[in-house]
Length: 552
Image (tube, rainbow, N blue to C red; front, side):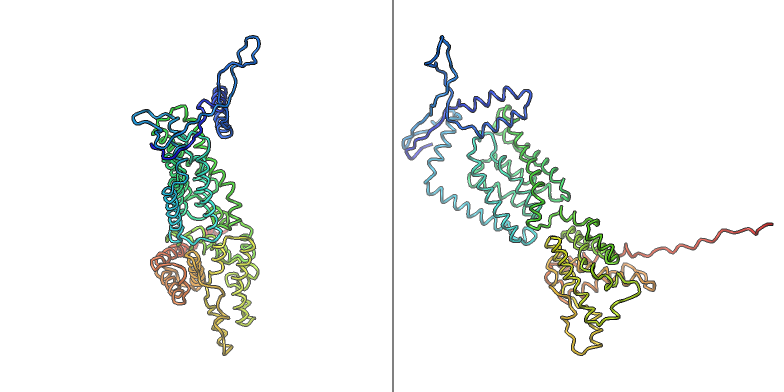
């Protein structure tokens, strides 16, 4: 390798103080306390600064002929390379000192290397374009909020900067993968839980690549980081409970160890170096899972994120608001449970977030808690709307959406759940009271008898709307004493008419549902409704036992 500029490079002796102390400490404690010895070796390696070298010489102040040899003297080794000089001769073996010299020469010579700097700038621009592409809502599966976007930018920047700092840590970089001290799995797990599994998978590929292209990672560190990130994104894809984070940490630790062993084998590392490196490799995975589990609750509240774990907790029917709904409005409670079942089944079929749909079904009518007697599912013969004008009746019915949104915000429910509550009626017309008002008044505005707000803007919200109207219509048709027996054909016809009506009135225009999705939703609704309202066999009455005539 030719060195084109005159540089003065300082290099310490390889037999230094902290290497000597570390070896002596490990030899003394590794037999009884191997883990503590491994931790101590790492701490000494990081904190100790090489500023003195070990030498053997006599102490000029010795007395009685005693030879004191443990003396430390400063002895920096320096060498100067002239322009055109050789660092390593062709055909000679390359030692560790030669490798250190080559690395130092490369560092010193590339500070003001214009082509090198331009290349790095170009790489950063390409990485920036890559991150923009991977952050596309169509790729992620949902639009990003401002808080989620800021979180992605901050963590990505910290990762790249941290990887650059980690490169300069006092490790034996020839064997120790620097990616072990970078939080690849931690960031990937956070993105998978808080934002999207697709985003986590994309960033599991992009983050190690960014560190590799910017020179922070070598090929070994890149391989270990890639294995760690991909394992983290895949193990949490179907996670539903917080303890799954601990299991994911164990899987990540195993993947880290396997990938690290592969890199050590390729480097032909001595077996004595394996325990320390593998210990910190496994620690990276386990610590990532524990740290995410510890930080997730405050991040969920700060970002108001709709995570799988939070949805599982909200779907508990023993939640205070759900128990209050059951007590105050039992008819609405039964209706909400059925809506949640319909919406969950349909969303699972079309690939939407079925947990979000289930929670939205449970909470969509919590605004009826304050005045349950004005809603038909809670009435038993007496209808309070018979005593008030239709305009006031429509106002009461419309208000339950606004009251539900206010309750949801006070409970700090996730925004997607609040959107389901706000949009589950869209801008539909309250047809019954509108027609009744037309009979009593000449000039009647449709807006006064339409629900406020806007049509559903997500697939889950649209499915809850269709489930709500389908369940209410089916209950009205098939629960009365004089109602006809339900069949698959009748239920399918009813659901299709309701879907066509919502399409005609523009209630599904912003929901991103396709006609194929609507057909799948209809089939899922028919299956659930038919199982609930199926015909039952009329068992014959049991005849009373024959009584023998009484005898005197």
